[in-house]
Image (cartoon, rainbow, N blue to C red; front, side, top):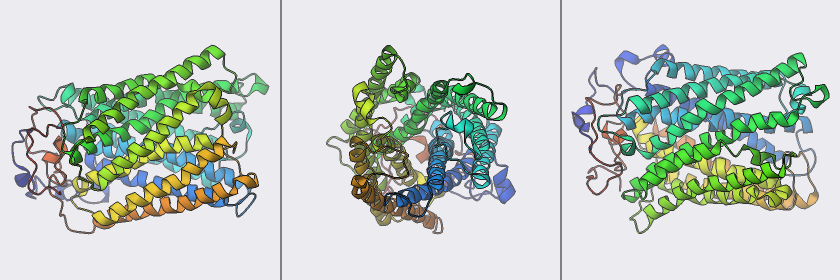
Length: 551
């Protein structure tokens, strides 16, 4: 393994110079946290901020599902319903699912996995967090001031003509984009410049391999969204004919701009989730991961092809048959590197002695749910089928199976996997397993009926519906309650663990990557001395499992 100058036991000695990052006497107090440039503290601050956004967006989702228990008005007007599902989508996409894994877990663990003391630009890292906070405050203010009812896609011409605080909301997305760009720049520079001695490209953990192309997407694609939001604001403020056809604009142009960012953004969301699964499976299978290089390169392939498929969101927009055919082909092509990952994960699990701890249960859930999301994406990539399913609940279900069944399930797995390392405390394993089961059951109960509704013609974003859809809507709403309960109890279980003693060993799961070779929680500067690498990643053939690792 890595040749760290002192043993983990020696690193665990809480001296003033080698205290863990949470209790370092030189960095105590609220102001020290607000101005910190320690990547671990910033990762924790991002973690709590994005978790708050996640819970807020989840509450909005439960409110929307409750309104859909019956056709017509239950407790919200149509206008309030539109504002609620816009709020749900905007918070979940821009304030949670895009920054959650890269900015929270990525900030914390990327330098540790590379054997670095921090990211390449610590002050830029601090700036990215406060820019995120500023953008989030603007978004919440826009909701309080006037509400937004455009949906999270802000489609024109409706978004240029409707009342409400659309201008402030779109500007908040513009500001949040800068946070994403800053984080991406930092990660690219860190991977290139701060790897430990002996760590070549193919000695990097697969988490790093996935975060790296994610960062490139953040840097290259996010400015397109920012420019699009500015153009939308200019049209609303100055009546410039950019997207409004009545004054010489082209509303389809907005869709091209928006999806040129937002489809690569799908991979900003899912690639980090895949990264977590690539760490969990070899650890709990005690196996060298199958096809390491293919998994690593498939992350790059997904990022590259992901830039070229935005037009599959626009099959019904009137684009040419040739363009539609090309986008359809590329949509099928982007599934290949994802399938490579799934095949290699399953091959790693084949005939392995699998430890079914909570992180591994979430990884298995991911394989099932993301598999459904990926396969239904193939249906939507077929031109003839998409004409029927476009803008129906089938798309809603597919999107959630990929984004929540993929990214969020992986995120929950990652939290449970790295929680002992981040905070030095073990959570209640029995409660965590029960929560995983509730999340899995509740998720499928919520979204499987939506595939059926969509195939029968139930349109998405509608406030009311035909009576024939009521049983499926009610079943979906009941499922959302189970899902919400599972997530809420899981978060409470993790939070309660913080009140207990620091009882986590340095390497509770027997992981082989560098973050497990320092104390729990890590010391302020991560390692005493400089780690060096002289082995392949995930090499359980030569790695000795620590005596205090959990079975």
